[in-house]
Structure formats: structure tokens, C-alpha cells
Image 1 (spheres, rainbow, N blue to C red):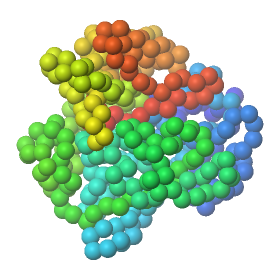
Image 2: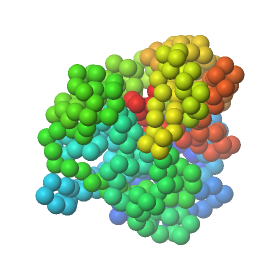
Image 3: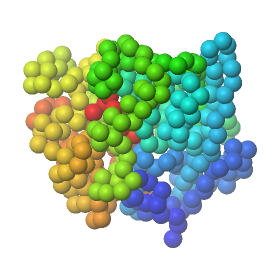
Image 4: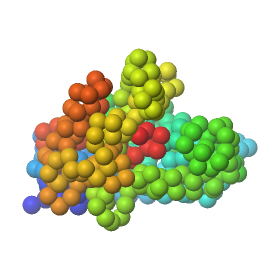
Length: 354
């Protein structure tokens, strides 16, 4: 019996991996790749497990848990620095470090579970800020070429909660991430109305850096967006659907019903997936499938309880998506479950996305 993947995911679901390796030393990566290669399935790289649904039967190959830690700061000019972060560094720890050092640029990403290396995969974002905004470069391992190489943001095909790493799964493993941040006592301009209201400031304001970062953590907790350490909502993977694109006619109807409509930088209109679910009748705390419930704080987060399985979790996703499609004619998109593979979810619940 191999290492149970349930012991390494926040949903606590998943069978054994044929082989489970933990990567802690960046210098040891070349040796680890030689160990990992082999068998019928490509190695699967696991971060903090907060965005992963593992199959009940496990993974028929090698799983590598990325656990490298470390942050270094290099001056770029008078007020700019490049922060280079190992892929296994928790994103929350990185945000706390940058705020303590007076570095602005990712302060609104605090409280999102998962690792820094996983953030570019989903182009993690919250409160109008996303990880690609500050990326300078990434060191990746290309399994096709069998070597490490450097990518620039333009190479990564970033979009709304997507990237090249997501659309070409399995080829590239992120080893470290470079970010360009500014030395500043104030946070980045607030672009998200809910956070502006929480801080009692106008949109575009730049509150003190530490105050803004703390407000994010408090708001996430109050709105059920944090990952609990115990209780009925502790086993979860954050938001399970992306905000779906909608037509102008659909946006007009949603606004008339009192629902929120988000506008992407490229002009795409998106509905709130959480609002759609609740309008469809999925209230917080409702049972959706055996062992799977909407969280007590929000419908967009599904939680697993004692009798949950990966199969029942997948069923719950299908139930939610089918109901929204039937009632609203809007298709919710999650990552598809792949036989004998893992299904990747968001790095964490972005506050501006529900």
C-alpha cells in the first residue's frame, strides 16, 4: 500500500500513490527527476493539497510533493525589488513576509491557501489583484525536454484563473517564482468595492499596507473564505467553480435581480458563481451528495464529511452545475475529473470571485 493522498490534501480524499516523493532541497531536483521518471503515468506534482481532488483509487505513478521553502530579496532600483520564492513556500507566508518587509504588490492575496508555486497555475487572484500582475520570471522543469528553463510572463498565457500550466498539465513543473514588488508604506490602489467598504475608503485609495493586509484576512474570515482548521467546513478545496462568462442580456437580467456582475480587464462579463448557486436553491449548509455539503458560510465551497468519497464529490459538482444550467442557462466550469488522475481546483477561494 502506497502513501495515501488523503493525508496530503485538504479534502482528505484519495487513495494511494504508487510512489510518493517529497522535494525539500532545490539542489536535489535533478536527482529527484531521475527517480520520478518511469512507469505509465507522468509524475504529478502536489503543493499544499488545498486545490486537489484525488481519485478514490489513488494515482498509478509517482507523486512529488513540492516542499521547498525560502524567500530572497534582490534590489532592482530605488524603490523596486525582485522577490524570488521557492515553489513550496506557502502563499500566505509569502504575503506575510512581504507586508512585514514593507513590500507592496501581493498584499490582497493574503489568506489564500496553497503554495506559491501553485499560484501561477490558476493565476490566483483576489480583491482585484492577481499573481501575474507582479511576476517577472519563473524557473520551470520541462518534462518533455528533461531540463530546467526560465519563462517570462509573456510565455505563460495568463488569463482569468488560467495559464499555460493549466491548459498543458503535466509538462511544466514550477520550481521557483520571481516577483517585482515596490517598497511602499501604502497598499496598492483598492479596486474591489467590498474591500473598500470594509476599510471605509473610496475605490482607488491606498490605505496603509499592514492595515489593508489585515482587513483582507478579517474579511475572508467573516465571509467564510478562509480554510478552517476544524469543524464541519475544515475538509474543503475552496471555491469549486469559476465565475462564468455571460452575455450582455444575461448581465442585465442578473443586475435586475440584484445579483453582482464582474467585468474582466478584457471586457468579458462574468456572473458570480456563488450567487447563481444560491439563487438556484443551494443554501449554505445544504447536503448535495453523500458526505458532501455546501459549506456553512457559502454555497460555492463544498465540504467533505465522514462518508464522502472523491466519487460523491464529483457527483455533487455535477448536481450543482446541472441545476444552474437548467435554471439560468449558464454553464459553470470546474476542472473535469480524469480517470486515474487528479483533478485540480483553485489555489484558494479568491474574495473577488464568489
